[in-house]
Image 1 (cartoon, rainbow, N blue to C red):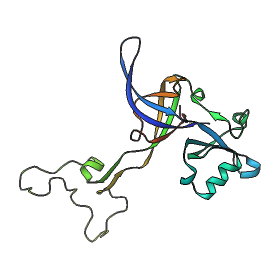
Image 2 (image 1 turned 180 degrees about the vertical axis):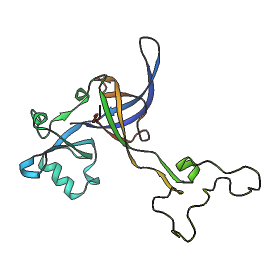
Image 3 (image 1 turned 60 degrees about the vertical axis):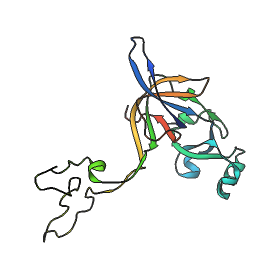
Image 4 (image 1 turned 135 degrees about the vertical axis):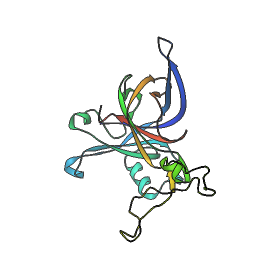
Length: 211
């Protein structure tokens, strides 16, 4: 199942024939190049490695410089692997470019991105806890979580307890989003609804697994 590395440009809206407004996220497809093909006999699994978004050689490490030069590919910022079947390998070669024609309008896709970082957050914002009383003797504990443990048994705080901490900036997959429109001239893919990540972030889009 082959996908693309794209960049989130922002959100807009489209109007259908009935005049209904449809919110869409605009994804820009930069040059996606096949930088390596991994085979079962040699590597133990079958996949294609896709590299995208140009990056200066000065900002690459030695391993990547050697990898790109070996395959005669311009230096890229991101690399992603997609597992594929034998039938999907036909016609694919190292150096081949993938574009928006990989998808079609109306197709369901999965979008993988890194959510916006929110910094340190309390339990009300992070876990949607209810606040405590505004009055009735409560003066300084309106947004505090309350008790987090027990006394003698078990005498500790359970692992995984929902508490204050770092919120956001995690990888998230949004499944079964619809490709609303494909702009081949400008290399745009318009996805119905919102996708994870801030504007300008890199996102992976691939055919839906659970469609």
